[in-house]
Amino acid sequence: MEHNGQWPLYEVFVRARGGLDHKHVGSLHAADARMAIDHARDLYTRRLEGISIWVVPSKDITASDPAETDSLFEPARDKIYRHPTFYDIPDEVKTL
Amino acid sequence: MSGVAAKIEAPDLFRYVLRLGDLSLVLGQRLGEWVGHSPALEEDLGLANIALDMIGQARLLLSYAGEVEGRGRGEDEIAFLREHGDYLNPILAEQPNGDFGQTIVRQVLIDVFQLELYERMTRSTDERLAAIAAKSVKEIRYHLRYSSGWLVRLGDGTAESHARVQAALESLWSYTVEFFAEDQLDARMAERGVAPRLSEVQAAWAQRIDEILTEATLQRPRDRPHSWHGKRGQHSEHLGYLLAEMQHLQRTYPGARW
Image 1 (cartoon, rainbow over the protein chains, first blue to last red):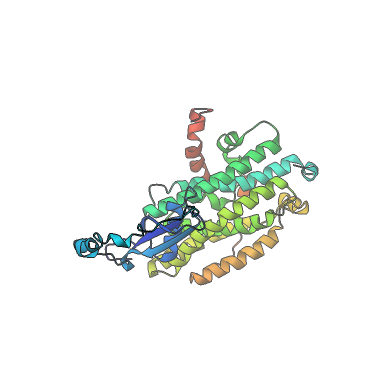
Image 2: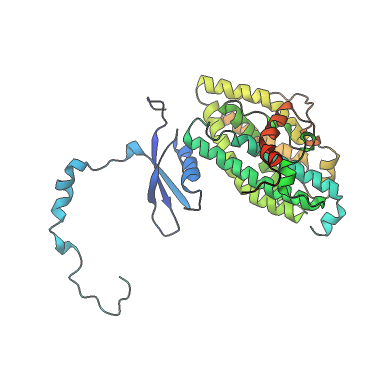
């Protein structure tokens, strides 16, 4: 248990169907990982939302700093050549 | 309801199905009392989920009991308009929630009983009971995952949590004797293949409970003689208060729907 009397926070990821990736759906408090899975099942899959659950302690997620948004993401803005829009797609290719 | 059921006295089957249904109904009602009062929001939802599964089981079983009885009573009448002595649940189910640890101990003891009973009842000669058992087993496996997880956490937790769940175990243990005290009705159901032998359920129950208690570092209490007969309709005082709350709406506004 953490110092403030709250259980640690976990981030919850749910896979809706086979073949799809796990999507972040929210967070919850739990004393340990197993309890986090149980809580996630009860909180986020009550209406058949998923077939698989991941939980990750929120403290173990390293996030980018919003203050660095400019230096991290701005430089990509003017590099349009990185988008594969300069190729001619043959008509026979239906799905790409 | 095929040829097999026809050979069974309807009152026998009616009473047997009531025993199963009342266990789910009364425990579901008890667990529902936690809503809004749990130690954490997440536990509120966890307990409510189990309570709803229990009420779902009760609906299937009590509806079936009404059909077997053949007097036109539906699930609501059977659930809400019977008297104290007509309920056939084991007494453990009606015991008060106490603290969270006591609720968890009660839940583990009943979850394992239901699991061992229903796993075997999926092979019942009564097709309806076999189908209800097959559906319920999936729910009960999760209930046990939840309850045994908590029992291990509390038993193997702090000195206080350990002492509290050990005390709860001591106070509730003797009620479990009733699960396995086979009477003539149980024996007739087993002979006809409707239900498993209770001695077989008991052996499996004891083994699984021992495993959980060992992991939870809890001492298994000694078996003591019991004088409780909830499954014959003799109950503790607690059931009356529970029924008063549960039946209030239907008795005040008969036939009320929403």
